[in-house]
Length: 236
Image (cartoon, rainbow, N blue to C red; front, side):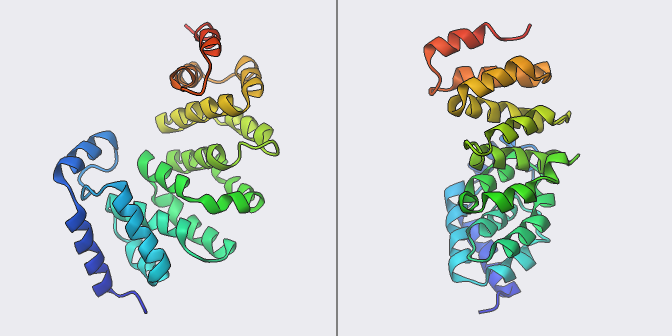
């Protein structure tokens, strides 16, 4: 059944029904860029709506209407629908191409990235797709690429390329630097020796380097012995 404006109005009514004003205020305080654009709907509820639309409704029609809606939840749900929809890889990547420029905060970026489990079966094509974004000057396009690499490409086949990209990226955006720091902490857990070599040889800026060390120290998957070593590696 074709998705209509009436259906979309019903969807927005459901969002309002799931909203929580206290949570909205709390969430907007954590997510710069979401101020005055959100309803206060929690991620599990949004995920449920996204799966329902992707599996039971005209998701293409929904995305066509939703692309002009700037609400935080609508952006996030749209990204999850692209992740969940049953379609071919090239169609999905075309929707992603249209969607990625709409990402304007870390939460939309990271939740959508975590939803794209299909990438594990399409790594080669997705890696090629990411290459232009790894050179983007736009903060959240670049963060998107960094987080996708972290989530799906920390494998024996790709780890050297991933670390190469993390060392080559030069961008002053806070959310880019924090994404690289986060990613390096995950790299350390999965590829300890390669990541140590990276930290000791690649000229990454002090902020990103120290944030990466901090995130490693906060990880329960890093041994006490390694944490002692990492504390001694911090730059002053």
